[in-house]
Image (cartoon, rainbow, N blue to C red; front, side):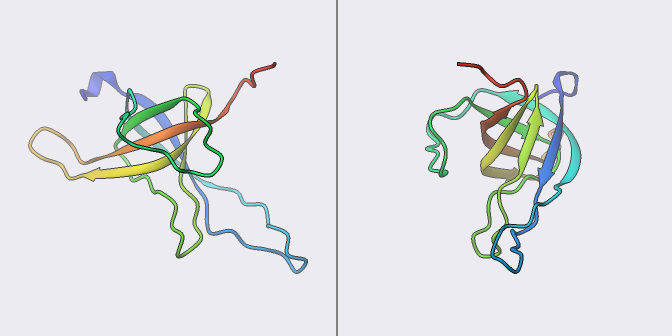
Length: 121
């Protein structure tokens, strides 16, 4: 991944879900983190087992900012990444420390959750 081939991303990070007195989930506003990186084809050896995944588009993002997967202990959901008119959910992450000319980055397997322009049937 070379600096002249970077894309702009917005990482959306949510806190753990909370509930009101009636037991309904409280709406959250995510923290938005700007980042840069590149987009590659998805790793076909990674099997996505997220609830709700039904074979949507997939990619592998190389991002120069930390991205997180879901944490079942704390109840924190996976980060979402906005790129190219869509929202992509992070399924797996491989953190890479910087080595020589290669800067530290995170390699994230993602799947398309929501296109900005909805597809009409």
